[in-house]
Length: 490
Image (cartoon, rainbow, N blue to C red):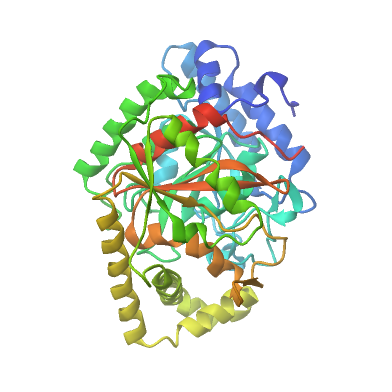
């Protein structure tokens, strides 16, 4: 196995893409670099980031990418770039466990649609990343929890924690994640990377293990918004096999906007012109700042806001109807719990001991939820969506902390947090910040904006449905000033 390559240290996905295009580095060299970092940092005694590492397959894919580039047949900006997939996306011939004992030896015959699209774009798969059991919210003891590269006593978050840690630690230049209540954006915030939950239906869920079909989203995770834009452009598009897939017209509208953004990428990266966000109205949802639990987190996120004003944006406070935000967590938790129970009820009856104890108990509770309560949650979901839609008549984007806390200690996912005189489960505290976009289907992104107590903090940017490129453009402009987050983990 090769070692790490100093030329690759710190390169973003976009930077690696440029280096591959110029011939400064080969895909095989980049792949060996990623595999060497996996060998050094991963494993159950390390970060516990990967469930399966596909080293030989990755090397073969890298050699094929190099051959295409040599012959002038490169497939685009992702050709030869090493990436990883959350282990709930099917990969043909490679086991896909969903972090569950029930699927520990499952080997699909076909790729998930988003995996197939990345493969068609030439991306190199280095492995399948760890996650919480069936993305439900808690790790199965067989697979364990992923540690945070910034502090190995802290969690990488969930459920896409393996993907976030892989990117943060330089084991992959990008990764696929999924997001039902914040599972891309929460780990991105905790691990100091960028993560985008796209507009609902924009990225196909065919071949992805479902948690809650009406809330699930697939999306990109990478160090920068520019990197995420490159990944998003490859995976979006109508999929007739996915009944929730966005119509072709809307998907192509986003693709065209991403093409324009790619042309502007260099401009944003250099923070020129001086006001790339002129005319963009950003609404600061102050009541979501009030959820902050970690001391210093609120002030850190607030310090990012003047950067957007300096870039030309109009930044002003907005508010939501009284009581509206209080609907988010109960509605989202009930919807995903009931939908998950419907999916897993037969396995729960036939093989209960194969579920982790927390998921088993949660599914059992969800099976007894009255139908009228589920209907009420769907009504509340519509109310949340209508309230956010109304805000976009006044602003173009919304902003608040991506998480109200920094990464919690390992093993505390099921614990409660004392906040504002109340004891609240950690997962519900997290969902309070990220859950609105799952209920509304809007694009929502976490971008690193600082460090509190040695741990990263994220700013959340959210926009109207199918305004994914607008969200990414604002984050790119911000990172043009703030810079790309560091590779960490040792």
